Image (cartoon, rainbow, N blue to C red):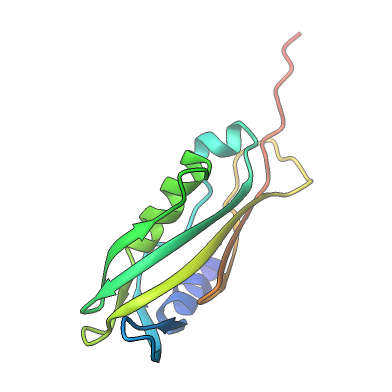
Length: 139
């Protein structure tokens, strides 16, 4: 698990986000830091899955806006937007980009919660795959 966390952090530190800047010329942003995306616990318990697009604005390397469509599931949208708001880029970087978060449930159930599988394909996609916890049947 520790190796997975280190690998994800390394990917996030070295990830590159290709963006369209405010003057519509193409620019490349380097992601310096940010939180690891997680599956929202309530969404996992309710077995909610889906995709959320986050329209992101960066000013001087800081995410100033992370907007999601009103028709997105609010549990998933909040998790995606909060993750994006934690991202930091080089101080000289400004612009806009869109990233799609995909929250998916694995087919296999587990007895206890586990860390999700996370794929970062920046700039276009963040994929979070979690195994649902099997219901407990009391007799």
